[in-house]
Length: 378
Image (cartoon, rainbow, N blue to C red; front, side, top):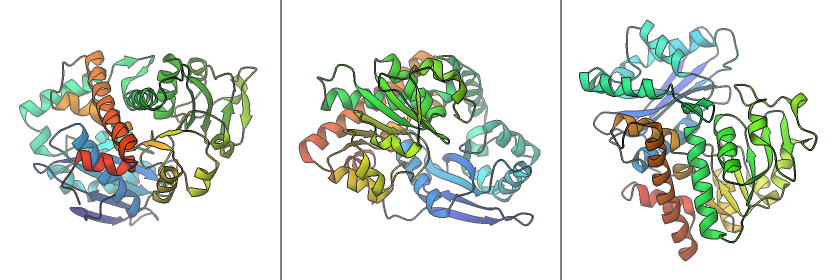
């Protein structure tokens, strides 16, 4: 990541619990930035800085006038008072929301709760007045609200757009680097919204999904997992019901996932989850980053040194950002299939550009992507 400092940061300490929170505004474009708000026990200012910078790159990737931001609350979202903690964090940062920050959902939060909390705090929008309070702004946000109700592959579109993009990045790099593999194999870490959607779209493309994991371990089937069936037997958190597994599906330890032989590894769980020791056990030829910063910096460098090709998150993970901003900034016809075509076109273009340059120069794909998206960001 760049060494440039964020534009602005806040550090909030809750008076009523042990919770603390961070808001990092990495960059502003026309006094506007966007990024999700997460609540998780391991949240840190360092992580929010990394994710806010990631949003700066993502907004550049989808070519919209928007800076990057990220909010995080260090607290367990399963605690009974988590909603009131969230509301107090939003209250403390309300002036910044009214002027700059459009708040999105993230791990441990949901959009409706954020929207309801802000309304109760006297702010009718989830972002700045100058973007959302105008007649034109309201038209665009009504379009987004309406399209966000769409169902794709039996699921709400908000749960599918990012995973769709990850699958397009995977297919793109496979065609460039290994065009002769007719039925590629893949393993996917995480089976929530991103991991589940990625698995489903790759399954429909003919990939053999040999292993997927959740917080309780991994499911392995050398002949390939029936992903549409498994999708029916997971909960909202991506936890798989082991009692519903098919006869050839086997339960293994989650750490064994890295040792399963497959062409592609797709980490789609949490940030900084894969370290250098994990990389030493990975046999896959390609890593497609489905989660935000799933590899530590050292792990990413080691993977590159070991000859593993990478599609970085600032390309593979932009599907959700592209979906929202295609609607808000009129990037294409406002139909689900047209927006998905737009997402596909962006991700294939970037993946192709970066992968071909990687083949020619051997440079790290993340660095290539950063330079390609924002040449002047130091």
